[in-house]
Length: 171
Ligand code: SF4
Image (cartoon, rainbow, N blue to C red; front, side, top):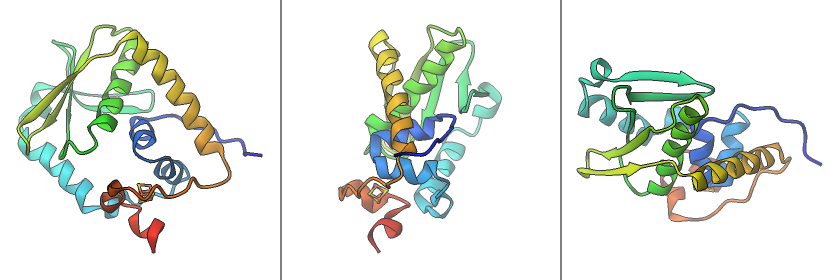
């Protein structure tokens, strides 16, 4: 039987849910190795250096457990900067979750742009009614996964090589 686990679901939980349930479980249980990941640091630096003028032009929003770094309030566009498009589906899920939270707070027609400055690639993201139903399902599954007593199994996929939990999982 699982134990009671109360949590606020963040965009990171949504992202990890789409990458690896074990990673989600470890993160949700406070086992956080991201600060040791050079990739994460590099990703943050890309965001800061590629768009140095953004803090002036765009707003940073924190609401209900999520933090949107770059929000263009005038055009209702979320800008999310990523290093690599290798996990684009997880990135897309993350920004859909931002749009969902904005939708819950009455901003119903916001859109998002995923930006990969190193690749000179962008992708537009919108929130559909189907997405809203899916997101509610994700939230329910995330709560089930993290309240389980057992850590989900390793997934043994290429993504593991870039994961901050690699040593934890495989050594
Ligand atoms: S190393 Fe692989 S199995 Fe372990 S948490 Fe990361 S993605 Fe999941």
